[in-house]
Amino acid sequence: MDLSLVIPLYNEDESLPELCAWIERVIIVNNYSYELILVDDGSTDDSWKVIERLCAGNSHIKGIRFQRNYGKSAALNEGFKAASGDVVITMDADMQDSPDEIPSLYNMIKDDGFDLVSGWKKVRYDNTLTKNIPSRLFNRATRQVSGIMLHDFNCGLKAYRKKVVKSVEVYGEMHRYIPVLAKWAGFRKIGEKVVEHRPRKYGVTKFGFERFINGFLDLASITFVGRYGKRPMHFFGLLGTACFLLGFIMILFLVAGRLMDPGTGLSNRPPFYIALATMIIGTQLFLAGFLGELISRNSLTRNLYLIEEKIGVA
Image (tube, rainbow, N blue to C red; front, side, top):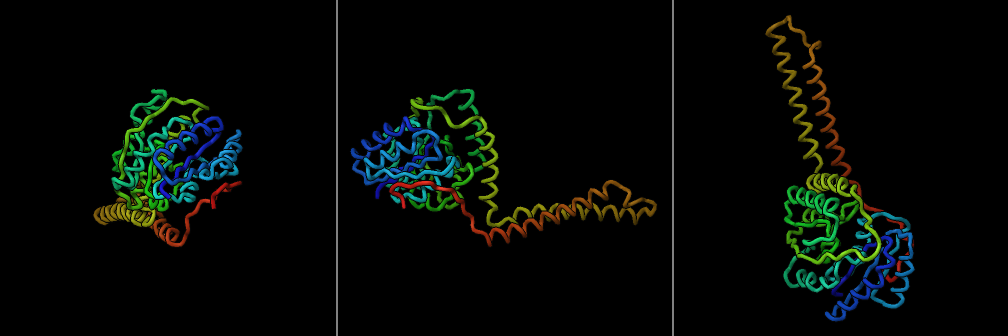
């Protein structure tokens, strides 16, 4: 199969028929073999009924329905599991991503050899104060931390080589950081393409200002997990050793001072307790590193999402 399209959605019953029809026109013109996987993230409107009708009318369309709302990352993760195309393209269901971008994204993966291509909505139709400015700050911070020179990490329109989506696990709210996850997994050829950002035609945005706060917290989390997830002792052990040695050196200075001046107190001085606390903290951090190593080598990471129904998906 040439192409798998994975579209996560939440309360998008108005846009789905028009979006799927547009995608089908693009696919027919380019003669791709394809599947369209619609992942309903616990919608409370008629989205699933619309998906059922679309699946009945087109055998290429498949549906996954969550029992409740788990978030975009969970929807993408399940869609990636079900995808079987050589190239996997994701886009949002709100009609702000243009299906006309599909052929160029597909060619960048197949012909140009990219592992991942991220869309860049260079011209946006969002509110500048509440979205554009925070988004620029967020993207700048992510570039600095990850070393990946993308302008728009959070763009829903992305293309992936199949091996990439089968090698990463998207959890929590990590959908913003799929390029970072791909880089940690060893995929280095990550590109970018300027894509069209269309004005919202149906519904309302599903994300509020809190996504930027969560985004920076997730960035700190993914940076730690990516660098030290398989070797936590390198992080906790280093900190623990540094703290223990600092406290030990402070104790040595205090003991040396006591030997030089027997009249100087030891246990009744604040530096003594600071040094003791530092040594205890260092020991605890070192033990945390040992426990982290044991956990990372003996645990299987998996996310369980309760799927209520599937159509055309194994």
